Amino acid sequence: MIKGIGIDIVEYDRVQLKIADRVLTKSELAIFNNHPNQLQFLASRFCLKEAIIKATNKKYKMKDIEISNNEDGQPMCNIDNLILSISHEKHCCVCMCIWEAL
Image (tube, rainbow, N blue to C red; front, side):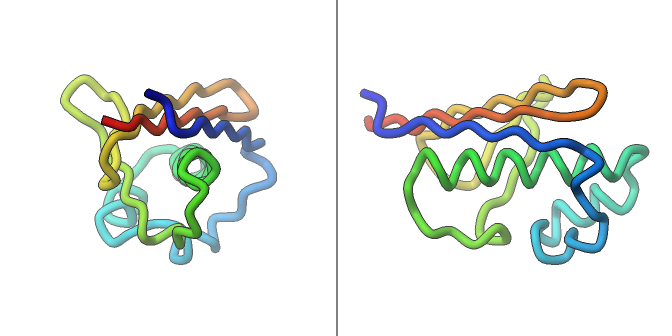
């Protein structure tokens, strides 16, 4: 059963790199610091965390949510029962989260 759905869209040029410390966990910051496209990485993490907060309807802080990728590149999270998706375009990304009840 689906408990919640969240979606968000972020334009890359509206994101500032200086927010990275407020949005990303230590593990995410390590990836961000070596990422070839830091702006896209930060924007997509921000976007996905917003979608997670909307789907779960909980007051998470951005740094409470850690996004990683499995071996196939699919996004995953430290919060259970979430299905995540990120899609990138030239100027923006869109993210979706489905919160399932088991």
